[in-house]
Length: 293
Length: 293
Image 1 (cartoon, chains in turn yellow, brown):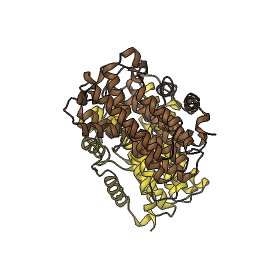
Image 2 (spheres, rainbow over the protein chains, first blue to last red):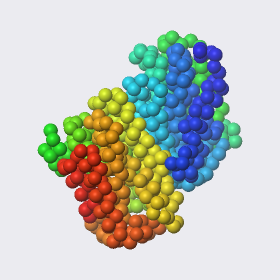
Image 3 (cartoon, chains in turn red, brown):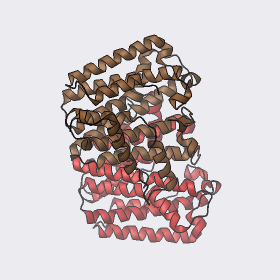
Image 4 (cartoon, each protein chain N blue to C red):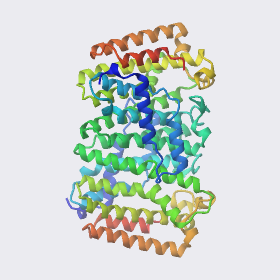
């Protein structure tokens, strides 16, 4: 099964099927909590992170099945982070992926708990994945470090602390590398681990993930200032309203776009260094750069 | 090293030292987040869960060092759950262990993030514990299931849904078995796993954990109605104020006390079945039953 044989749409469908199965409500789970967890994960997500995991594994010659559990784990963590980031005490947003945020559709307590349960489910999934124990351990170690205080959660904390304050480019990048980049890098690295890749290949791929992650955020900032709410599926102009520093605010729109192009070139260079010259990872990189929501 | 050779106080000191080391602020972590995580975990906790993990391992002949990482992981998860349960959208409490709750001492966003990061750290600790990979995997699988939607978080969700409603004894027990019991059982089971215990021994010990967990909750409810705020270190009468169903409300104070005695006897019976006739686990059971805060 080669990368080229499977389209991103097919992979996305497979991911959504797997996520839905992992979120099937059982008798042991309080129905409202189960419903909120499904609402948070299933629906209109772009699935960039699990696509990165699957595409990396496929590009390195592993079957998609070997990377499906880590792909889902990464998406569960991403979904939990969105639920918590949207809370009134954080970004206080009421629209996500074109629908009311979880605390709006349910209530704040349920949103907090659904996020907490999704994080636990991500690690449960990894621990029971059909992979050798030492690979599962490496994945759990990698993902937990990426999403904890030194990674995703830490980045969100820097974001909140920095809101309303003057921030330089270095600090803005450090914040986004932690908040967004760490999980994207982990998504790629879990795919590499599923394919039992060597350290050198993993390093190139993590550089790819890091550059894509940074491009993703610059594009996000650009969309916030240039694209209307109805196209984005979330409120436009939120960054300015919240007093958040952005790449366009620091660099201007044109220089931000040029920066995205440099990051994309660097990302593709990293793929070449890993011996990957075409396929789904290239397609994802282009989608990240060219997306309009 | 036998169980009898180490006192609970010595074990508690060792646990607190290990927790403090795992929470040492590094340059990669936003200082306010790191401080909130330390505040949430270090301080006046009873450490019942990590003591259960260590004492179980010791009772089964394993060294304390083999169970220290899982003991700390269990306590980190417990601490995160307290931080989130105290939030305004949940129990809205401003006092915990005699000090302001995390969202009062810091702010709500930091409390949510500190809880999230503590959960990730628990799984990171387990994944890097100095134990064979298959045992680490079993521990992660066990803990993640115990604290997710079918366990601790699910129990909190049932609690919130049931607040202000008439609840029967069976539903109250189901709620507490999930909210409190699942993590206490996991605490014991992780100690058994650290000692590479067989399935039969593990089952007896999990029954011990389940009975102790239920006794813990009945005692908690009794303390809430019978002991003043300054002795408990948290507000008294909270359950009634929040409209929560309790064992004393359903059974009366005297029958609740008799129920605790039956649970204690059953817990000690389970220990005997596991071949454990004295030592730290007995002492913990007595402390759970006889505590005044």
